[in-house]
Length: 94
Image 1: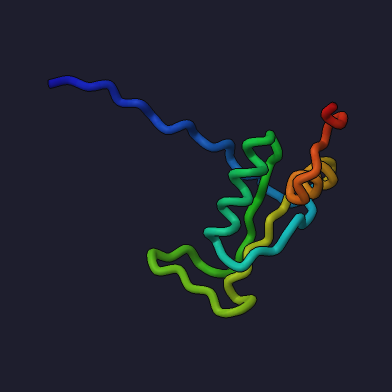
Image 2: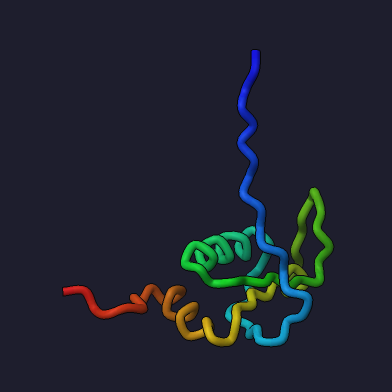
């Protein structure tokens, strides 16, 4: 029996420095941050996630200790805020 292996698409490597990135939001935990990153990236917005909690099989968060910063490029900040607010970024629909 032979099969075809379908590789997962690879992620673009994260930039070496955070210059040019601004904080869009601060969320409670990694799960919420991943959902937000998926939404933004599906609209072509580059995202960085920053947290002080080490990745773990058993994630935990206690108050602000588990917070994750969601960073986007400065030039995409306004579009990202509109997207989170649910406001269309293009011309109004008829």
